[in-house]
Image 1 (tube, one colour):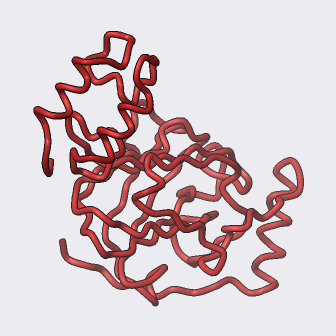
Image 2 (image 1 turned 30 degrees about the horizontal axis):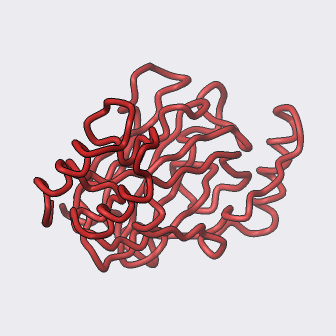
Length: 220
């Protein structure tokens, strides 16, 4: 994919005041989340997948251009595999931008963009995007809204965010390998209805799940 580099700017105090005032006019004050800016980014890794977060989208346009209000994450990838990023249960018109080599257009390169792929139409046209990621690479993620005018966008809107990695049959911990860790986890869950280890879906972790792990042994 060809990388597109665009200028990155951080809004100053006057700009922040203007946006916060707009939020107040729209129905209340805006309380900035801790990952409002790149410096406050939430960091997660492959070991945290599936990763889920929810809250309010943010108060300030930290990257001056479309989109507008935004928040930031960094994903430290440990497996080469397809990953899915989605915001299908968010409010209004949300988007996902993914960068490599840094956060935003000045420090990094735009890697992928998701917008309007979830079922529905404005004001709930939200993104879901599946992209191949590479082990040993960090990816910066910007979530936000596209437009400052209602009903498509406003500061402080609710969002839902989820990241998953493509796995394989018998890979119970999502590391793309069926090995002793999966087997030990299954033995610890033996006799329960833990869906992570109930590979055959019969409602009980047992011998058929054990045999499924042995049959799938190795890399995905």
